[in-house]
Image (cartoon, helix red, strand yellow):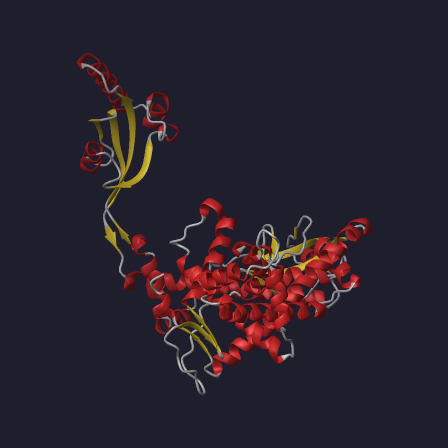
Length: 503
């Protein structure tokens, strides 16, 4: 019976919780606040809810989450969320009951009596109402009958408010039809992109402009330098080339000597004038460098096994050596060497300033180019015509539908661009220059594809109901939000978190 009663109330609670969400509300004083109750977890005007009421609602919400999440539910991790949802449930139902009363809605004693008398759980085997069974249940769940009746009246008032607001939510067939078309129509667009900012090729800054940048934007330069610290603190490195003659892990002395002799033969051939890179491609057992002619590129200390590292960093450039590691025998030649280097901020700040100025010059160039195209469109050209005249290439999309994020493949999230594109006629271009992430873009509608009448007719009623539900939630959200704010401003909304901190 308890589950049945709770389930009967969840549809109201679920509606306004979904519509409101929100965080803990805690009043800290405007106007003349309520006197804080020592036993109330939540106070909403004259209504108080103690730990018993809080626990009961919290248990209901936990049951809901368990059903929804199944094995993914974690009561410990969701503790704060469950506390929050339970408190919001208590606050919102109290607000709804108060608003309902102010609107003149009432719950007669007879309505509550009919509810109790009709509940099968409170009937005996003869099908008659059992006062003791009802009293025992009300005392166990609510403390006494009076508390149950009070909260049942609040629930019924909340339900009547929801029913009243539901009656206000109307959506015509025409509205629903337009919504179906908007959700299902598709378009293709052509767009011109001025790419993400990169330094302008061949840019040479004006000396005075460079000096001004160094003087006024030092913090920006320092931040960029710090973000690239590893670039300017370079350890000693060598460029090594090797040919590996792999040695089996269980090789005996005879096998080891056989492999060593093969490696030494390769060294001899290289010293006699054969190309080491060619021999590496032919003989090396290292799959990672074999195709590169044995070239390992520049490597620093700590990147190679100890024996290889010692040989590489001790050999002179151009000299060959034979070294044994856990992998086998390596014919090693050092191709180049870089000494350790630390470039200070003072050494690179002009370089960084030049880079940033080049990026800004590139951005300014892109803005100017986009504005030229925009002006051409205002003058009567299409985007396609203006791009062709400027020797620029357009991108073309596949079929696109409306999406909340306005995402366009290869372009990115472009809500404004897509909103305008859907408002255009086929062949029409927009002169507006859109900022899409770190790019600039202009758009032209190429083609529009509307859903067939059969598709629209089949979806109208479902869409109408969806819109109605949305309006219902919006109405309820507005009522509750306004009253929450009023209560908080007047000091009539208090949540005592200390009373639930141990749950």
